[in-house]
Length: 333
Image (cartoon, rainbow, N blue to C red):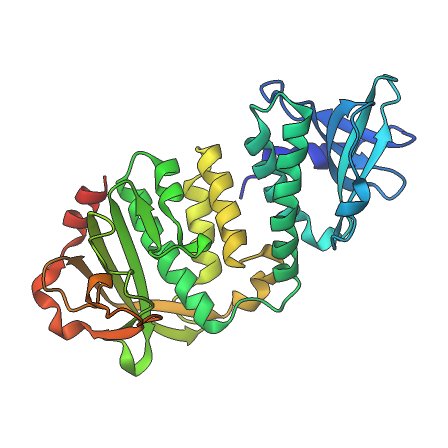
């Protein structure tokens, strides 16, 4: 897999034998309005992202230093008494892949910002999110159920990417990592992906009365895959994700967004060894256009005072709503 721009810069800095007293840095891009630098902080050579701000700009660094695995600090700009650097340092080197992706996302988010105060507020907003993601990375990988769920969503995403000329749109439509009502949403359509395995492979569980409610969104589709799960046989989650990553090499924005969404699902490079053995084979794929009398419960059917509705659908009773892949992706594209 090709390295990201930010990873290339860090590796270049790490191979630099020049001695430096505090900070070794390189500007990320002249196209980004704020003065953003990719840097190493001596003496530990800690990776960091650095923002050059006015020396007079005041903020409370201590409020951020309850964070785990990252540290916020400022250092003077040795080349200008009117400037200083605001640093976000990575303390846990095992998390460098996550840190790289999050920094790319942060730079993209502040690319048009021309106010130091707004830059500060956007950084503060993202740091809270970073902390929860770093905490997830400290666990022992995804549960088997979560692995199957992510496999199903990325399996559908790969098919979607193969049919669409707009890769960024495809990745942006993947809303599952954000815990949205449906796994894919864009404009006037939504797709809910359901992954089953074992003996109940034709029975799916619906999480709420809104999940298949087409009064909320104009067109809803149900994409179901039945999996055979076996160690040492089939495609692993790692292999599927690597295949999608390689397909996005020519689309930097889509690639970075996909990496960020993977992190939001709890899939981290540090956990990849946990997923190397378990393979998935597709037993069956079913696609349904949810409309009319499709078997479901919708919000308008729920009596006042009833909530948290969950139910199951037996797919063998839904044959008249089945459609093929071509029909589905024609609708989405």
